[in-house]
Image (cartoon, rainbow, N blue to C red; front, side, top):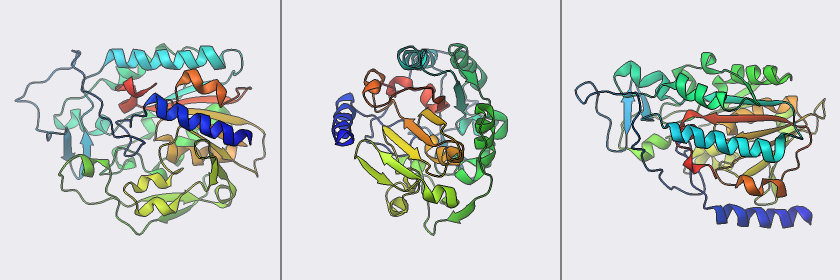
Length: 329
């Protein structure tokens, strides 16, 4: 009964907060566009030097599509840091000791500057954020990633390519995770968000997910709908956004419950949609993982739905969200 009441309150809170889909996500409760920033930055390029992206900002290089993420919005980085600090001061300072932050580079990191398109300074963005989060230990995953770890037509990374990222993050947090999975590729073409943003000609991606006996036993609780589901919702593979097979897409508050965990440790991930495919790869290390998306749930309301009591904490965000952080509530 209590979960039913909380689900109703949470759904009202999400609707009231005016959920806006993040620019990194190919799905979400809304399709609100984030206005382009006009703030000047140190990056500059001339029209003569810049290849043409289309009207939506999408360009294609060697079969990979990306949408420009430029210029660096220093105020956006600062705003994200302030919202994270609010979460820390309000909920974590007196309740949680093991706090981590990791930043996911978007695809432009591998494509833009190298091919003459304007690019933000990723080192500066990351250091600006991390330096304002001195309460969190930084986990650097940049060196583990390369262009082929991402979908050609979508913003996200490919789950089958990021087991080393999961291992790096888990190791930093002091837990062990499996590297043994069964790899299944769906028999449907995956046309990602860039195909819906722009009239581009790119071969579709394939969509692959990783499973094992442990993940098959895990259950995912959706606090909005007060319902349980599997880690992978394969019914969504034929929908508008097949990436939603990972944890059923954009959700404000989820928990992954691992009944066979060898530990009682818990993890809370403050995240965007990149974590939908990463979180299952961390499940072996925890009895419970709570995923909080403060793009859809205001931090001021968080204490009504999550009790903080010594969990590990991970702030995991893509540079697309950090550089467009007005979508954070």
